[in-house]
Image (cartoon, rainbow, N blue to C red; front, side, top):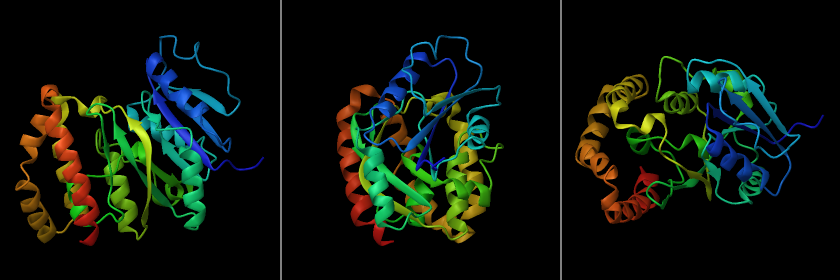
Amino acid sequence: MTQPLFSIVTVTLNAEAELLRTVNSICNQNILNYEHIVKDGESTDSSFKTLPEDPRRRIIVRADEGIYDAMNQALYYCKGLYVVFLNAGDCFYGSNVLKDVSVYAQSQGYPNIIYTDYYNDRIEDIYRYPSLLSKTFLYRKTVCQQATFIKKCCYNAYGHFDLKYKFVADYEYLLRLLSFGEKAYHCPIIGITYKDCGYSALPQHSKILNKETVNVRRIYFSIIERFFYGMLWFLTFPHLRMWLLRRQELRVFWSTYIKFANWWNRNIITKN
């Protein structure tokens, strides 16, 4: 059997409508060289009764201890060259995404990590990443996991997601790969529509998320780096920005902010 180019993993639990939306965006891709692994945590709704037939889809039903444990379980079944985690409710931005990524991957000699830009469905705007992931950028944030294609061999070589993190295991994993000398390549397309309303986005989880982020930074950034980048981060009023993000009536603020952030990423972050 020919190895598929992509293993698309969708982790789900009682997400009937969201799962169907995601599956439809996968079925609409104009290349067939993929497999779709649905890792379900023993749903009790009708998640699978409304899905269109697709011989490339495999459904794995097994109890898990959370989203990262489910992702780790799914990795066991992945046979593709690249793995991308497209969670229930998230979608490919258009029908050409996998084709565009495959063309880009071939042009770059099939690098181990590829990331794309994304459309944030909650704030209704496009977020564009820098062409290089500098430490200035990575201290502040990570790339969207759903818009990141990582070779399966990386999970074999560097391990899976660390389950001691409930919210930032994907951030830790990217930094782990980069710390071993892997390079991330930016494919300048809009890869996904990100729903941005999952478990980690809930306000009541912000304290744990922030604590985990601090712990990850202590591993991958020196004391001097944490002081320097921390001061720069503090001067951007992050807590105020997050508060404004949760205010739907201030959507005009976020439209302006995203435009500035995209310009900053292209013109400043890339050079650091």
